[in-house]
Image (cartoon, rainbow, N blue to C red; front, side):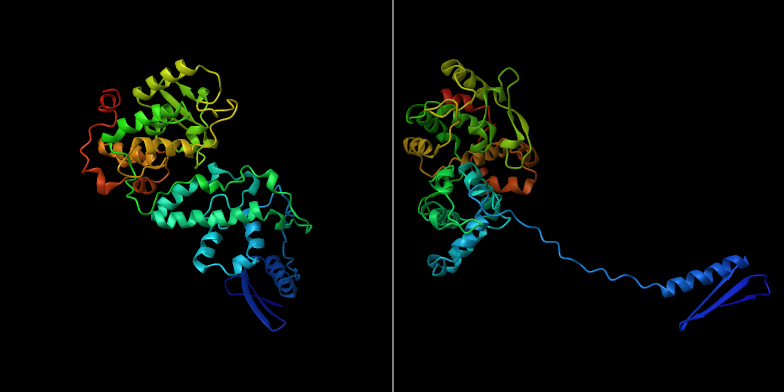
Length: 376
C-alpha cells in the first residue's frame, strides 16, 4: 500500500492487493494506515461455509387420541372404494382435510355436531345451493363411515390397528344433524312474521322436549347459533339487566359477547325459570340427564316444523337469518346487525340477509308487533 501527501495536506492511501485496487483519503496518517490493514483483512476474509441442515419437525406417532381427518384421508385414499370414486365426490371429501374446514386438524374423537355447525357459515359465505351443501354433507358421511365401520382398518404410527370406535363422541356422523333442506322443496331461508304464531304454538305443544318454546324464542331474539344456545348456563342470563352472556369459547370466532335482548324474551325466560326451577345449571338441559346440556336437537326441530305446517322449509340455522332479516326490515343498519350477530365482517352479515325478499314483506319494528303476534 502507498500513502502520499496531497497539496491540501491530506493523506491519500492507494491499495493494490491481490489484483484489487482501492483508494481513500484521510486527514490523519494513522487513519490511512489502519484503513490499509482493514482492507487487506476484508480481502483475505473467506466466509465460512455453513451447511444448511433441514429442520425436520417430527410429528408424534398416530394414535387413537390424536388421529385427525387428514390422517384418516391418507389411509382411506388407498382403499378400493376411494380408487373408484367419482372425482367430484373425491374433491369434496378432500376438502375436509384442508384449512378451509375449521376442524381439519382436530382429533377425530373430539368431533361432534357442534364442530360441524361451522359448515353453515362456510357454505353461506360460498353461496352454495342446497344441492351442493347436501353433497358436501354426503362427502363427510362417507369419510365418517370409514372411521366408524372400517375402524379396524385404521392404523397408528406403530402399524397396529387403532381401537378408535369406543372413543368416538358419536358413532352417527356428526354431519347427520346438519339441515340444508330438501332440494325439491322451496327454501325461504327466513321466517315470515305472519307464520310466527304457528311456530310458537308447535314449539309449545307439539314436541316431546318441554323447553322447546323457550329454546326457539332464545334463538329468535338473540340471533345466535344453536350450538351457543344449547350450551348456555343460567349464570349467563341476567334477567334484571335483560342481558345474555355468550362466552368466547362457545362462539365460532372466539369473541365473547354480552347481548341486550328484547323484554319479550326476558319475560318468557322468567316464566320458564318459574316453571322448571333451577334444577340444572344448563338453560336447556338434556331431557334424561340434567347434568348435561341438550346434545341432540334435530328430531325435536323436525317435530316442530312438521307441526307448524309452514309452506316452506325452515331449518334451525334459518332462525339466525330471520333475526338479521327482521332487524334490517325494522330499519337497522347492516353494521348494527353485524354486531348483533357477532360477525367480524359486514360482508358475512350481508349473506344472512335475504335482500330480494325483505322489502316485499312490509314488517314493522322487530319487537313492537311481536307481542301481538305471539299473545294475540
